[in-house]
Image (cartoon, rainbow, N blue to C red):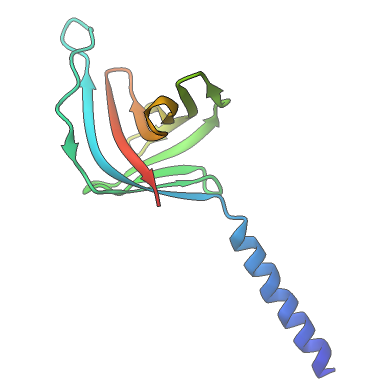
Length: 137
């Protein structure tokens, strides 16, 4: 009976460990960010100067969310996983989201293939765009 108990306990821990290993959480760090805004005429202005920023970013597909751990935490609830797109220069994963204020936006993770696979996180609203340079942890 004791051997059978040990077997079930080992099986339980193995199952829990396997579940953790299949978790779809991706961790990134930012190195800088820039902002692009529309002007009064509705035309896009110029990108702001790159500001240094060392922030954690999490993409959790189990919880359907992306979190940027800035001073004010930016939470993006994923509503739609858009199809992956690829060109000669970019690999793009995009998500239709709602932010913590209920505003619609698109969050994209772009790998720049011709720039040594540099990664960027774009958060696109109707009137502004935030871009973070990111790297995998």
